[in-house]
Image (cartoon, rainbow, N blue to C red; front, side, top):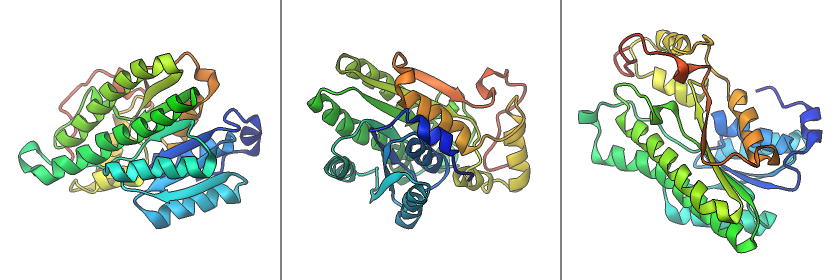
Length: 277
């Protein structure tokens, strides 16, 4: 990934803030962590993938930013409580909590096991709730404004075959975000959700690998977007920085699509199958 330019770092729209980014070892989370640091924030990089998370933290430091890696499985409430507590102990507070961690599951309804369902919901939706709850407790205790940002998905509103558990988790995140926006508003806490389209990340490549022809699947993903390309993690990160900054001070309870026009397009045929090409 190309480093964010130093001019962006000098703009400092997040200077003095502390941002916690879950699922930050790769993809959108990695790009957002680097972008927050470039905008001046102290960044807590967290992921279940410790080597990957450590690399991102080191990358931020190499670019002149400030970061610390804290390993956590956000599907576990105790890990989320520890994560936020350690972030506060190290940096003094949490100003921005970006609940980005997520996992995919390309299975039909009848092939989805109880264990599959519980794990997807615990990581994608549970992790967003647990981390946001702990961060909002700190914000309210300090009587300080703050930002909760969630990486949801267009699957919250329109979906495909063989992805029911993932779609349910992302729909739940949108409902949760709106509830947090209402509860947080009297305390100056804003909550919003990003809806990325098909972004070129390791997760997208894993999804494409479920089909008989992964390269063809990626082509179909790209063609589904009116801009006729896959998104890049940096496309999402630039919007995330805006939403985390005071420039978005009157934006809360909103879903922001970063999807190349995907959700604006009228579906002209059967939905994309994840496992059958």
